[in-house]
Amino acid sequence: MSKYLFLAVVFFGVCPPLSASPKPNIVFILADDLGYSDLGCYGSEIATPNLDALAKNGLRFSQAYNTARCWPSRAALLTGRYAQQIHRDKLPGMAGGGVVGVRQKWARLLPDFLAPVGYRCYHSGKWHVDGKVLAAGFDRSLNINNPGNYFTARGTLLNDVAVKPPANEKDYYITIATADHAIDCLKDHAANHKGKPFFQYIAFHAPHFPLHALPEDIAKYSDKYLDGWEKMREARFARQKEMGLTNTTLSAVERDLGPPARFPDAFKKLGSGEVEFPIPWSELTKEQRRFQATKMAIHAAMVDRMDREIGRVLDQLKAMNALDNTLILFASDNGASAEIMVRDGGHDSSAPPGSAATYLCLGPGFSSMCNTPFRRHKTWVHEGGISTPFIAHWPAGIASKGEVRHTPTHFIDFVPTVLDLLGSELPKQWEGASIPPFPGRSLVPAFAKDVAIARDSIWWLHDGNRAIRVGDWKLVAAAGQNWELYDLNVDRAEQMNLAAKKPDKVKELSDLWQRQTDTFVELVKSDQTKK
Image (tube, rainbow, N blue to C red):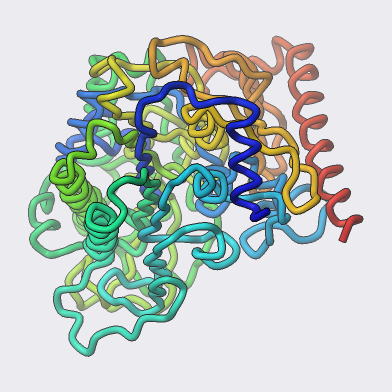
């Protein structure tokens, strides 16, 4: 018996489908380094009409979480596991794990659970998961290994085979290429696999550094941000409150908090317009204000272009009459980035900002604005690093339109949600190895109404930054720092540290965090022993 036939028997022999209606298509669109407030429907001034329309005709989740970094988030999203469970992020006292970690055999990606029930699976864009794409169960793939240049196909793999870049790449741009491939997969599906449902994973690089955008897109925002990060942040926060996305205060900007890792040589290459800390806008020189506003304009242009390309994908879904029965989800792999560095091809300060010869990063000033109303940035597990916009659109399955869901969610919930929609259960074994239960929960009940999804906790650990959320209580600490305690019901901005006032709650949650961590360590040790 093949593994797929075996899984089909397990799925449908134990738990039949929820209904006799056609299985929904599933599209997950992932942005890279997008801030919580970077979409119009989450308070932004950036033009994102296609994503805004999905939110207007679907749902927005106000308390959705990722893992604070790209590769752990992708592992969690596609496996339904915390990355530390499956060697894709580091555990304290354990060797290995992280970006070069290799998953256990039982840690399958979602396509291996969808193929047995008839799905075709497609991947377009960034990968950043261990192993080859087709071996992970996808039928087609365009794997764009970001080479530090959005204007070249260098490093790209088509169905796991290296692509030779064309001699003339004048019109090439990674974001457009990602959408082109996704649309081509959809067209092929409509022509040759019409009777089958599909899972499409579209992982844009935008707006990850380097800040590269088309000149006409940058021009649209060239003078938009000259008022500075404080005023723009306040404007976004005001819109968020009007939308009912938050009832918290606006966090204070941490003026002495710069990038998570320092690269002093980068500032020599970037020149006197660059600044390491989010100091008051009024204290910047005219050159610095223009330089920072230009970087934010490029970031906005990248988000704007991503939305336009998503619009093209939506047009294809409409053309093949698939939009109504397609569950479309959108999120970001972590918060906006405070990083400042120069890598790959270096930085030519004489070249037009945002062009292929430049290497710019957003930095902590406008990253704070993009993560409105939260504290900190990518890599930290304070709310600014782990909070993502999260949109769900499915006309045939979600009756509510334009509503906000406030239940906390995490990337580990995606796979359990999909299996729940299909009436499927996780198999107990894979090739003789026992499969642990999912740590996540199905979000299907929240599709119907704004209900709390019952769960014990949500847990984080990355680069020594650690946190746990139980109900509305969150315990969080930056690497090497003491625990902080917040009541997220009124303070998602993490401004009122209650640790000194509630030591018993700190101990309760810190003990729970440690027990969860110890459980993951034991799981990994057990897997290593079996090898």
